[in-house]
Image (cartoon, rainbow, N blue to C red; front, side):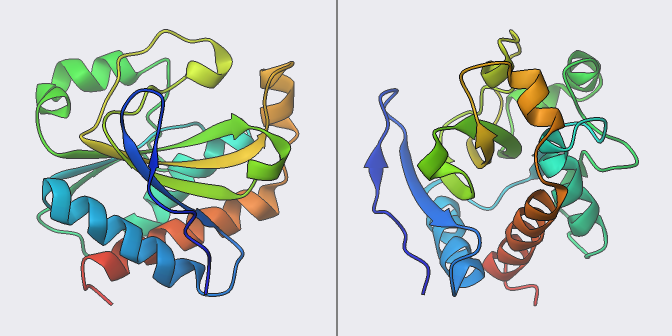
Length: 188
């Protein structure tokens, strides 16, 4: 079984559960973490997968969105895929066209940078996601709950680090997230 490293109280007061994507039983453990979120806040009305296919590390969100688009999620709305990514340059347009992204039960998914021991960690948490924070972008916080995947080490030359992240790991993380999400809703 994958190890969920407990319920942590982050410095901003949000609770989170963490799973290593490649640990045995990771999909099952992440599914349990997502069910914990759904019990706390309700099943999402919208899944917002943030990132771009123009950067290997930042492709986590669009890869998850593409995997989920292959499943029947109705009535859950899905934004963000490899074909139609939601990223820093068009996020404001999505919010303008879909103002419910600021008020409904949105589950936001994005890549993150962190410390070396955290690379490969999937973190499911209550509270909004602050997209672009790892690369010093000022974007609105989104989501009633969120999931981040730590794809590489942060702290120096973040854009270069994201460009040089292993695609294999990002694809495996995306697959784990999509499978766990489907399982958490009982759609398997």
